[in-house]
Image 1 (spheres, rainbow, N blue to C red):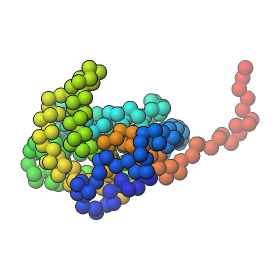
Image 2 (cartoon, rainbow, N blue to C red):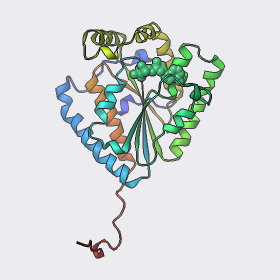
Image 3 (cartoon, rainbow, N blue to C red):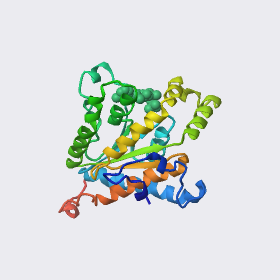
Length: 268
Ligand code: ADP
């Protein structure tokens, strides 16, 4: 079910062709409940063998426009997963030390070790998104980053990291609704920031920057998925489904028992 959301390498993405409100075969949340629960359960089991085998790691990259649902996705898909085997990294405005290095320096340090699931809440893609929209470096610098990112991700994949990238695509109307909800609901006020409203003015520039990142950096070793994200429950289903599918492909096994396990007596 996740395949329609995968961006085939070499595709020229035009986001106007994608519907953020799409919900596939499901008309409403309740219809997808069983599939959602099943994904969570399978993910739990797969993470256990990922951890026990210790050969592979899974890196999930989440990108979205503001209020796109990165936090909610993490909360949902990591539900039930053993916290010992996962690690979430949120990338903010780079610190002075980070800026004194190449832009992939902080990213590389956060890549999950074998046996782990790593989630990036924002990522190195900010370096071709916000950086591009706000002219934080010259165009000649961000233009070469697409190739650099592809090479970096290929190296990670060659070294045992399965990479899945998700663009949580919400509509401009849905973003407005979510901002309004944040303003009105006392439990959500803390999520509201005037800077998000200012960024909304750059909506079209962000869409253009996303289209380039999705077109130029969806590779066989690190594919992008465009996730219809106006409906949170459907978004969660797509992301968890793609994670399950990717982990199942790894054909992982628990380490074999000790050859003489039946000979070992545990002292009283
Ligand atoms: P979030 O919106 O992800 O919940 P914050 O409100 O703290 O978290 O926002 C993080 C900010 O850091 C975003 O505005 C994002 O654009 C910015 N940011 C992340 N990476 C970079 C980068 N490489 N260069 C400049 N700004 C960045």
